[in-house]
Amino acid sequence: MAVFKVEGGYRLKGEITPQGAKNEALQILCATLLTEERVVVHNIPRILDVMQLIELLRSMGVEVEELSEDTFSFRAKDINLDYLRSDDYQRRCRRLRGSVMMVGPLLARFGVGYVPKPGGDKIGRRRLDTHFLGFQKLGAKFDFDRSEGFFSVEADRLKGCYMLLDEASVTGTANIVMAAVLAKGTTTIYNAACEPYIQQLCRMLNRMGARISGIASNLLTIEGVESLGGTEHTMLPDMIEVGSFIGMAAMNQSELTIKNVSYDNLGIIPAQFARMGIRFEQRGDDIYIPEQDHYSIESFIDGSIMTIADAPWPGLTPDLLSIFLVVATQAKGAVLIHQKMFESRLFFVDKLIDMGAQIILCDPHRATVIGHDHRIRLRATRMTSPDIRAGVALLIAAMSADGTSIIQNIDQIDRGYRDIDGRLNALGAHITRLEEC
Image 1: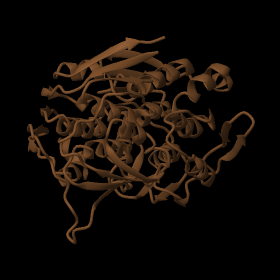
Image 2: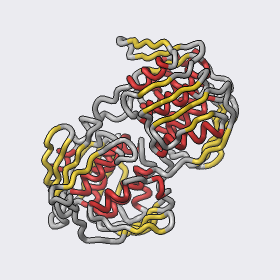
Image 3: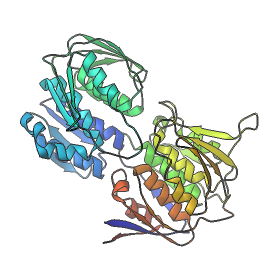
Image 4: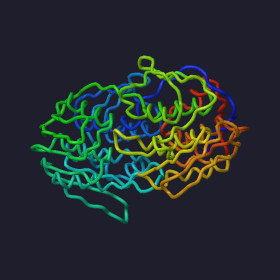
Protein backbone atom coordinates (compact mmCIF):
# COMPACT_ATOMS: atom_id res chain seq x y z
CA MET A 1 0.00 0.00 0.00
CA ALA A 2 1.41 3.40 -1.01
CA VAL A 3 1.93 6.12 1.59
CA PHE A 4 3.27 9.66 1.59
CA LYS A 5 6.23 10.53 3.78
CA VAL A 6 5.98 14.29 4.27
CA GLU A 7 8.76 16.40 5.78
CA GLY A 8 7.15 19.55 7.12
CA GLY A 9 8.38 23.10 7.32
CA TYR A 10 9.42 23.76 3.72
CA ARG A 11 8.01 26.82 1.98
CA LEU A 12 6.85 26.63 -1.62
CA LYS A 13 7.79 29.02 -4.41
CA GLY A 14 6.96 29.08 -8.10
CA GLU A 15 4.12 28.48 -10.52
CA ILE A 16 1.58 25.67 -10.74
CA THR A 17 -1.22 25.02 -13.23
CA PRO A 18 -4.44 23.32 -12.09
CA GLN A 19 -5.53 20.17 -13.88
CA GLY A 20 -8.81 19.82 -15.74
CA ALA A 21 -11.86 19.66 -13.52
CA LYS A 22 -12.55 16.18 -12.13
CA ASN A 23 -16.25 16.79 -11.51
CA GLU A 24 -16.74 18.13 -15.03
CA ALA A 25 -14.77 15.28 -16.57
CA LEU A 26 -17.04 12.60 -15.10
CA GLN A 27 -20.13 14.29 -16.61
CA ILE A 28 -18.57 15.02 -20.00
CA LEU A 29 -17.20 11.51 -20.48
CA CYS A 30 -20.58 9.96 -19.70
CA ALA A 31 -22.20 12.34 -22.24
CA THR A 32 -20.12 10.77 -25.03
CA LEU A 33 -22.53 7.81 -24.83
CA LEU A 34 -25.32 9.99 -26.28
CA THR A 35 -24.00 9.87 -29.85
CA GLU A 36 -22.44 7.39 -32.21
CA GLU A 37 -20.30 10.16 -33.67
CA ARG A 38 -16.80 11.14 -32.57
CA VAL A 39 -16.37 13.41 -29.53
CA VAL A 40 -12.96 14.91 -28.75
CA VAL A 41 -12.32 16.11 -25.18
CA HIS A 42 -9.38 18.31 -24.17
CA ASN A 43 -7.83 19.05 -20.75
CA ILE A 44 -8.79 15.68 -19.27
CA PRO A 45 -7.16 15.19 -15.84
CA ARG A 46 -5.19 11.94 -15.66
CA ILE A 47 -6.42 10.99 -12.21
CA LEU A 48 -7.59 7.64 -10.92
CA ASP A 49 -11.36 8.24 -11.06
CA VAL A 50 -11.27 9.66 -14.58
CA MET A 51 -8.96 7.00 -16.02
CA GLN A 52 -11.12 4.27 -14.47
CA LEU A 53 -14.19 5.77 -16.16
CA ILE A 54 -12.38 5.87 -19.51
CA GLU A 55 -11.49 2.18 -19.10
CA LEU A 56 -15.10 1.41 -18.20
CA LEU A 57 -16.32 3.15 -21.37
CA ARG A 58 -13.78 1.19 -23.42
CA SER A 59 -15.01 -2.08 -21.87
CA MET A 60 -18.56 -1.16 -22.89
CA GLY A 61 -17.51 -0.89 -26.52
CA VAL A 62 -16.65 2.80 -26.84
CA GLU A 63 -13.77 3.41 -29.25
CA VAL A 64 -11.25 5.42 -27.22
CA GLU A 65 -8.17 7.03 -28.76
CA GLU A 66 -5.51 8.89 -26.78
CA LEU A 67 -4.53 11.89 -28.92
CA SER A 68 -2.18 13.55 -26.42
CA GLU A 69 -1.40 13.64 -22.69
CA ASP A 70 -4.74 15.30 -21.89
CA THR A 71 -6.83 14.82 -25.06
CA PHE A 72 -8.91 11.75 -25.94
CA SER A 73 -11.48 10.97 -28.60
CA PHE A 74 -14.55 8.81 -27.95
CA ARG A 75 -16.93 7.09 -30.36
CA ALA A 76 -19.80 5.17 -28.81
CA LYS A 77 -20.99 3.55 -32.03
CA ASP A 78 -21.29 -0.08 -30.94
CA ILE A 79 -22.20 -0.42 -27.26
CA ASN A 80 -22.38 -3.93 -25.81
CA LEU A 81 -25.57 -3.76 -23.72
CA ASP A 82 -25.08 -7.34 -22.52
CA TYR A 83 -21.89 -6.19 -20.79
CA LEU A 84 -24.03 -4.03 -18.48
CA ARG A 85 -25.17 -7.21 -16.72
CA SER A 86 -21.69 -8.69 -16.37
CA ASP A 87 -19.71 -9.13 -13.17
CA ASP A 88 -16.87 -7.08 -14.64
CA TYR A 89 -19.21 -4.13 -15.28
CA GLN A 90 -20.52 -4.30 -11.73
CA ARG A 91 -17.01 -4.51 -10.28
CA ARG A 92 -15.81 -1.47 -12.21
CA CYS A 93 -18.89 0.61 -11.39
CA ARG A 94 -18.84 -0.16 -7.68
CA ARG A 95 -15.46 1.52 -7.23
CA LEU A 96 -16.43 4.68 -9.12
CA ARG A 97 -19.23 6.98 -8.01
CA GLY A 98 -19.29 8.84 -11.32
CA SER A 99 -20.52 5.68 -13.05
CA VAL A 100 -24.09 6.56 -12.03
CA MET A 101 -24.08 9.35 -14.65
CA MET A 102 -23.94 6.76 -17.43
CA VAL A 103 -27.53 5.78 -16.65
CA GLY A 104 -29.13 8.91 -18.16
CA PRO A 105 -27.32 8.67 -21.52
CA LEU A 106 -27.90 4.90 -21.76
CA LEU A 107 -31.58 5.28 -20.93
CA ALA A 108 -32.05 8.08 -23.46
CA ARG A 109 -30.28 6.36 -26.33
CA PHE A 110 -30.90 2.66 -25.73
CA GLY A 111 -33.95 2.57 -23.45
CA VAL A 112 -32.13 0.79 -20.61
CA GLY A 113 -29.78 1.82 -17.86
CA TYR A 114 -28.20 -0.44 -15.26
CA VAL A 115 -25.76 0.41 -12.51
CA PRO A 116 -24.80 -1.14 -9.17
CA LYS A 117 -24.70 1.04 -6.09
CA PRO A 118 -21.60 3.12 -6.88
CA GLY A 119 -18.55 3.68 -4.72
CA GLY A 120 -16.62 6.88 -4.02
CA ASP A 121 -15.81 8.86 -0.90
CA LYS A 122 -17.06 7.69 2.48
CA ILE A 123 -18.43 11.05 3.57
CA GLY A 124 -21.92 10.10 4.72
CA ARG A 125 -25.16 9.52 2.88
CA ARG A 126 -25.09 10.39 -0.81
CA ARG A 127 -28.53 9.37 -1.93
CA LEU A 128 -29.45 8.80 -5.57
CA ASP A 129 -33.19 9.42 -5.26
CA THR A 130 -33.05 12.65 -7.28
CA HIS A 131 -31.61 10.81 -10.28
CA PHE A 132 -34.18 8.05 -10.39
CA LEU A 133 -37.17 10.21 -9.48
CA GLY A 134 -36.24 12.34 -12.48
CA PHE A 135 -36.04 9.33 -14.77
CA GLN A 136 -39.42 8.13 -13.54
CA LYS A 137 -40.99 11.52 -14.29
CA LEU A 138 -39.64 11.15 -17.83
CA GLY A 139 -41.54 7.86 -18.09
CA ALA A 140 -38.96 5.25 -17.13
CA LYS A 141 -39.74 2.18 -15.04
CA PHE A 142 -37.44 1.91 -12.02
CA ASP A 143 -36.33 -1.10 -10.02
CA PHE A 144 -33.86 -1.50 -7.18
CA ASP A 145 -32.66 -4.96 -6.21
CA ARG A 146 -31.76 -4.48 -2.54
CA SER A 147 -30.10 -7.87 -2.19
CA GLU A 148 -27.72 -7.15 -5.08
CA GLY A 149 -27.59 -3.37 -4.62
CA PHE A 150 -28.44 -2.96 -8.31
CA PHE A 151 -30.44 -0.13 -9.95
CA SER A 152 -32.21 -0.48 -13.28
CA VAL A 153 -34.39 1.80 -15.42
CA GLU A 154 -36.14 1.03 -18.70
CA ALA A 155 -38.28 2.98 -21.15
CA ASP A 156 -39.38 2.59 -24.77
CA ARG A 157 -39.17 6.37 -25.27
CA LEU A 158 -38.77 9.05 -22.66
CA LYS A 159 -41.33 11.88 -22.67
CA GLY A 160 -40.65 15.46 -21.64
CA CYS A 161 -42.35 16.87 -18.56
CA TYR A 162 -42.11 19.49 -15.83
CA MET A 163 -40.19 18.48 -12.71
CA LEU A 164 -39.12 20.18 -9.50
CA LEU A 165 -36.00 18.50 -8.16
CA ASP A 166 -36.12 17.63 -4.47
CA GLU A 167 -32.54 18.91 -4.15
CA ALA A 168 -30.19 20.85 -6.43
CA SER A 169 -28.03 17.79 -7.00
CA VAL A 170 -25.16 18.39 -9.43
CA THR A 171 -24.85 14.79 -10.59
CA GLY A 172 -28.64 14.37 -10.49
CA THR A 173 -29.13 17.43 -12.69
CA ALA A 174 -26.46 16.25 -15.12
CA ASN A 175 -27.97 12.76 -15.35
CA ILE A 176 -31.52 14.03 -15.92
CA VAL A 177 -30.40 16.60 -18.50
CA MET A 178 -28.57 13.89 -20.46
CA ALA A 179 -31.69 11.73 -20.41
CA ALA A 180 -34.01 14.59 -21.40
CA VAL A 181 -32.10 15.79 -24.47
CA LEU A 182 -33.38 12.78 -26.46
CA ALA A 183 -36.84 12.65 -24.87
CA LYS A 184 -39.97 13.41 -26.91
CA GLY A 185 -41.29 16.89 -26.17
CA THR A 186 -40.14 19.56 -23.73
CA THR A 187 -38.67 18.99 -20.28
CA THR A 188 -38.54 21.75 -17.68
CA ILE A 189 -36.23 21.21 -14.70
CA TYR A 190 -36.71 23.59 -11.74
CA ASN A 191 -34.27 23.72 -8.81
CA ALA A 192 -31.57 22.47 -11.19
CA ALA A 193 -27.94 22.74 -10.14
CA CYS A 194 -26.18 25.52 -12.04
CA GLU A 195 -22.48 25.02 -11.26
CA PRO A 196 -20.01 25.99 -14.03
CA TYR A 197 -19.53 22.29 -14.78
CA ILE A 198 -23.27 21.85 -15.42
CA GLN A 199 -23.10 24.92 -17.66
CA GLN A 200 -20.19 23.34 -19.52
CA LEU A 201 -22.15 20.10 -20.01
CA CYS A 202 -25.21 21.93 -21.34
CA ARG A 203 -23.17 24.01 -23.77
CA MET A 204 -21.42 20.90 -25.05
CA LEU A 205 -24.74 19.14 -25.55
CA ASN A 206 -26.06 22.16 -27.46
CA ARG A 207 -23.03 22.00 -29.78
CA MET A 208 -23.98 18.35 -30.35
CA GLY A 209 -27.47 19.43 -31.43
CA ALA A 210 -29.43 19.54 -28.16
CA ARG A 211 -31.78 22.44 -27.39
CA ILE A 212 -31.19 23.55 -23.82
CA SER A 213 -32.08 27.04 -22.59
CA GLY A 214 -31.77 28.66 -19.17
CA ILE A 215 -28.10 27.67 -18.86
CA ALA A 216 -26.49 29.16 -15.70
CA SER A 217 -29.87 29.39 -13.96
CA ASN A 218 -31.79 26.92 -11.80
CA LEU A 219 -34.57 26.63 -14.41
CA LEU A 220 -33.59 24.58 -17.46
CA THR A 221 -35.82 24.02 -20.48
CA ILE A 222 -34.91 21.16 -22.80
CA GLU A 223 -36.58 20.57 -26.16
CA GLY A 224 -35.97 16.94 -27.07
CA VAL A 225 -34.26 16.06 -30.36
CA GLU A 226 -34.04 12.80 -32.32
CA SER A 227 -30.26 12.42 -32.19
CA LEU A 228 -27.01 14.14 -31.32
CA GLY A 229 -23.78 14.53 -33.28
CA GLY A 230 -20.11 14.81 -32.45
CA THR A 231 -18.21 17.81 -31.10
CA GLU A 232 -15.02 19.02 -29.43
CA HIS A 233 -14.94 20.17 -25.83
CA THR A 234 -12.32 21.71 -23.53
CA MET A 235 -12.80 21.32 -19.79
CA LEU A 236 -12.39 24.07 -17.23
CA PRO A 237 -9.53 24.03 -14.71
CA ASP A 238 -10.43 22.35 -11.44
CA MET A 239 -11.69 24.98 -9.00
CA ILE A 240 -11.05 22.58 -6.10
CA GLU A 241 -7.37 22.36 -7.03
CA VAL A 242 -7.23 26.16 -7.30
CA GLY A 243 -8.71 26.50 -3.81
CA SER A 244 -6.41 23.80 -2.45
CA PHE A 245 -3.34 25.64 -3.77
CA ILE A 246 -4.48 28.99 -2.34
CA GLY A 247 -4.91 27.39 1.08
CA MET A 248 -1.64 25.50 0.77
CA ALA A 249 0.31 28.69 -0.01
CA ALA A 250 -1.16 30.55 2.99
CA MET A 251 -0.73 27.66 5.42
CA ASN A 252 2.92 27.21 4.40
CA GLN A 253 3.70 30.95 4.23
CA SER A 254 4.64 30.51 0.59
CA GLU A 255 4.76 32.63 -2.56
CA LEU A 256 2.83 30.94 -5.32
CA THR A 257 1.33 31.76 -8.71
CA ILE A 258 -1.58 29.61 -9.86
CA LYS A 259 -1.80 29.77 -13.65
CA ASN A 260 -4.86 29.77 -15.92
CA VAL A 261 -7.52 29.44 -13.22
CA SER A 262 -10.56 30.62 -15.26
CA TYR A 263 -11.12 33.27 -12.60
CA ASP A 264 -14.64 34.16 -13.71
CA ASN A 265 -15.74 30.57 -12.98
CA LEU A 266 -14.39 30.48 -9.41
CA GLY A 267 -17.49 32.17 -7.99
CA ILE A 268 -17.30 32.97 -4.29
CA ILE A 269 -14.10 31.00 -3.65
CA PRO A 270 -11.62 33.93 -3.84
CA ALA A 271 -13.85 36.13 -1.66
CA GLN A 272 -14.06 33.43 1.03
CA PHE A 273 -10.28 33.10 1.17
CA ALA A 274 -10.07 36.90 1.44
CA ARG A 275 -12.37 36.74 4.49
CA MET A 276 -9.85 34.33 5.99
CA GLY A 277 -7.31 37.14 5.71
CA ILE A 278 -5.39 35.55 2.83
CA ARG A 279 -3.96 38.12 0.42
CA PHE A 280 -3.78 37.43 -3.29
CA GLU A 281 -3.84 39.27 -6.60
CA GLN A 282 -5.62 38.50 -9.83
CA ARG A 283 -3.11 38.88 -12.64
CA GLY A 284 -4.97 38.31 -15.88
CA ASP A 285 -6.25 34.76 -15.51
CA ASP A 286 -3.65 33.88 -12.86
CA ILE A 287 -3.77 34.17 -9.07
CA TYR A 288 -0.64 35.38 -7.27
CA ILE A 289 -0.36 34.65 -3.53
CA PRO A 290 2.48 36.55 -1.83
CA GLU A 291 4.41 35.16 1.11
CA GLN A 292 2.59 36.18 4.27
CA ASP A 293 3.59 35.37 7.82
CA HIS A 294 0.09 35.94 9.25
CA TYR A 295 -3.52 35.97 8.08
CA SER A 296 -6.43 37.08 10.27
CA ILE A 297 -9.97 35.77 10.02
CA GLU A 298 -12.57 38.52 9.71
CA SER A 299 -15.57 38.77 12.02
CA PHE A 300 -19.08 39.61 10.93
CA ILE A 301 -20.11 43.29 11.15
CA ASP A 302 -21.72 42.77 14.56
CA GLY A 303 -18.51 41.19 15.90
CA SER A 304 -19.79 37.60 15.89
CA ILE A 305 -17.57 34.70 14.84
CA MET A 306 -17.13 34.11 11.13
CA THR A 307 -19.08 31.14 9.74
CA ILE A 308 -18.05 29.40 6.53
CA ALA A 309 -20.72 27.05 5.20
CA ASP A 310 -21.30 25.14 1.98
CA ALA A 311 -24.28 25.84 -0.26
CA PRO A 312 -25.46 25.07 -3.82
CA TRP A 313 -23.85 27.23 -6.50
CA PRO A 314 -23.26 30.15 -6.43
CA GLY A 315 -22.59 29.30 -2.78
CA LEU A 316 -19.35 27.70 -1.60
CA THR A 317 -18.65 24.18 -2.84
CA PRO A 318 -18.57 21.58 -0.02
CA ASP A 319 -15.41 20.10 -1.56
CA LEU A 320 -13.37 23.02 -0.20
CA LEU A 321 -14.57 23.07 3.41
CA SER A 322 -11.84 20.62 4.43
CA ILE A 323 -9.27 23.03 3.01
CA PHE A 324 -10.75 26.05 4.81
CA LEU A 325 -10.79 24.10 8.05
CA VAL A 326 -7.13 23.10 7.97
CA VAL A 327 -6.02 26.58 6.84
CA ALA A 328 -7.90 28.08 9.80
CA THR A 329 -5.73 26.12 12.24
CA GLN A 330 -2.86 28.57 11.62
CA ALA A 331 -4.93 31.74 11.19
CA LYS A 332 -5.35 34.51 13.73
CA GLY A 333 -8.88 34.30 15.08
CA ALA A 334 -11.64 31.73 15.10
CA VAL A 335 -14.13 30.39 12.58
CA LEU A 336 -17.10 28.02 12.57
CA ILE A 337 -17.00 25.54 9.68
CA HIS A 338 -20.52 24.30 8.87
CA GLN A 339 -20.63 21.29 6.55
CA LYS A 340 -24.34 21.04 5.76
CA MET A 341 -24.40 18.39 3.06
CA PHE A 342 -22.39 15.43 4.36
CA GLU A 343 -22.41 14.23 7.95
CA SER A 344 -19.09 12.33 7.89
CA ARG A 345 -16.86 14.83 6.12
CA LEU A 346 -15.55 16.49 9.28
CA PHE A 347 -14.50 13.34 11.08
CA PHE A 348 -10.91 13.74 9.86
CA VAL A 349 -10.45 16.61 12.36
CA ASP A 350 -9.40 14.14 15.06
CA LYS A 351 -6.14 13.76 13.11
CA LEU A 352 -5.64 17.53 13.20
CA ILE A 353 -6.37 17.58 16.94
CA ASP A 354 -3.70 14.90 17.39
CA MET A 355 -1.33 17.27 15.58
CA GLY A 356 -2.07 20.03 18.09
CA ALA A 357 -4.81 21.95 16.29
CA GLN A 358 -7.42 23.67 18.46
CA ILE A 359 -10.69 22.37 17.08
CA ILE A 360 -14.01 21.69 18.76
CA LEU A 361 -16.12 19.20 16.81
CA CYS A 362 -19.56 20.45 17.78
CA ASP A 363 -21.49 17.72 15.93
CA PRO A 364 -21.12 15.79 12.64
CA HIS A 365 -21.75 18.98 10.66
CA ARG A 366 -19.98 21.76 12.59
CA ALA A 367 -16.48 22.42 13.87
CA THR A 368 -15.08 25.50 15.58
CA VAL A 369 -11.41 26.24 14.84
CA ILE A 370 -9.25 28.53 16.99
CA GLY A 371 -6.17 29.43 15.00
CA HIS A 372 -2.56 29.32 16.27
CA ASP A 373 -1.50 32.36 14.20
CA HIS A 374 1.68 30.40 13.35
CA ARG A 375 2.85 30.76 16.97
CA ILE A 376 2.65 26.99 17.48
CA ARG A 377 3.38 24.59 14.62
CA LEU A 378 1.38 21.42 14.21
CA ARG A 379 3.09 18.17 15.24
CA ALA A 380 3.94 15.48 12.72
CA THR A 381 1.99 12.23 13.02
CA ARG A 382 0.80 9.12 11.18
CA MET A 383 -2.66 9.43 9.65
CA THR A 384 -4.98 7.94 7.06
CA SER A 385 -6.72 9.75 4.22
CA PRO A 386 -10.49 9.08 4.52
CA ASP A 387 -11.55 10.79 1.27
CA ILE A 388 -10.12 12.91 -1.54
CA ARG A 389 -10.57 16.36 -0.04
CA ALA A 390 -9.74 15.44 3.56
CA GLY A 391 -6.66 13.67 2.22
CA VAL A 392 -5.34 16.87 0.64
CA ALA A 393 -6.24 18.84 3.76
CA LEU A 394 -4.13 16.41 5.80
CA LEU A 395 -1.33 16.74 3.24
CA ILE A 396 -1.39 20.53 3.68
CA ALA A 397 -1.27 20.07 7.46
CA ALA A 398 1.67 17.67 7.19
CA MET A 399 3.58 20.07 4.91
CA SER A 400 3.36 22.78 7.59
CA ALA A 401 3.99 20.50 10.59
CA ASP A 402 7.10 20.15 12.70
CA GLY A 403 8.69 16.83 11.76
CA THR A 404 7.92 14.01 9.35
CA SER A 405 4.38 12.68 8.87
CA ILE A 406 3.10 9.53 7.20
CA ILE A 407 -0.19 9.64 5.27
CA GLN A 408 -1.74 6.26 4.47
CA ASN A 409 -4.44 5.36 1.93
CA ILE A 410 -3.15 7.91 -0.55
CA ASP A 411 -5.10 6.20 -3.34
CA GLN A 412 -7.90 8.46 -2.12
CA ILE A 413 -5.79 11.52 -2.92
CA ASP A 414 -4.75 10.07 -6.30
CA ARG A 415 -8.43 9.77 -7.21
CA GLY A 416 -8.68 13.55 -7.41
CA TYR A 417 -5.17 15.02 -7.75
CA ARG A 418 -2.74 14.06 -10.52
CA ASP A 419 0.90 13.51 -9.48
CA ILE A 420 0.36 15.79 -6.49
CA ASP A 421 3.66 14.80 -4.88
CA GLY A 422 5.70 15.45 -8.03
CA ARG A 423 4.02 18.78 -8.75
CA LEU A 424 4.48 20.05 -5.18
CA ASN A 425 8.05 18.79 -4.91
CA ALA A 426 8.85 20.91 -7.98
CA LEU A 427 7.81 23.91 -5.87
CA GLY A 428 9.98 23.00 -2.89
CA ALA A 429 7.91 20.46 -0.93
CA HIS A 430 9.50 17.30 0.50
CA ILE A 431 7.03 14.49 -0.21
CA THR A 432 8.14 10.92 -0.84
CA ARG A 433 5.85 8.19 -2.15
CA LEU A 434 6.68 4.85 -0.48
CA GLU A 435 5.30 1.32 -0.50
CA GLU A 436 4.42 -0.14 2.90
CA CYS A 437 3.57 -3.75 3.57
